Length: 271
Length: 104
Image 1: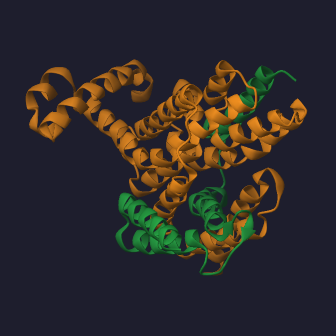
Image 2: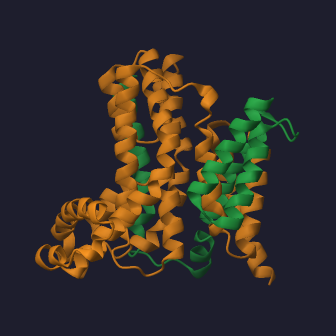
């Protein structure tokens, strides 16, 4: 009920959130601005705006790895003969880095279209897991919020958001965290694609900035392992992923995740 | 096939997979064991991405001390475990990798 009324209110909150964020930058802390708080926002909107900016903040470290990746994609797409408009559209409509890079490679080597689509499907199968994993936290939302947040559910947005959710159970307006993280990643991905298309410049690979993505996931996985089943799931999934590395279409990732989850459940039952 | 058709169909499929359970949840009741297993998705998926990133060099399994990413990754794991600080983990891990690449 509260959620149903709040659709438009949330848009205001984002707006006021942006406004509030600038103020908080100037004054270091939102709480020191009582006059703003009283005149323009209810406590409700402050909480939602805070959650939004929490999402933005936890997503930011990942951009270090995402932006070069987006630029590389833009460069490769043009090299493969894809038009700038189509390359940018792929970043908006497909919005999945690894699938986009592989699509570019398949288009370049003139692989039939239905194989490309099958590959995209298999590569992105893991999103079904993300969707199931994050769904309980979004269950109370009206459908239009679900439609929007599902679009933003990338690897990077999912990873930071789900860790935040498991550490902050029952926080109000928690969907705003996913919105903040998702929009941050979305903006970085669109802009870095554009930069790659326009500039054609690639950050030197010797900088190894792609490694920051693995490092971010390391920072995320440690707090996610909270008990023995979690540890068993992590190790089993990791080892299975190494053993199944040669499977095509990133199927190793899906297989390893499922084996890891099964092992974790099994170890839970043992106790 | 037209590139636009690939983008459109691939994009719709991906969106449908992202939306699947988010839309279903609340309409169907999930059994207890399934909800339990969902809490194991993040550690499983993240580890399944991390392990190959650290252990494979140029597509080949490399468990030796020559593997810079493995060593830097282990340093990062230690930092993440002790501090639980994302930025510090990234900074120390990147520094370790760049130092290893520079001295070898």
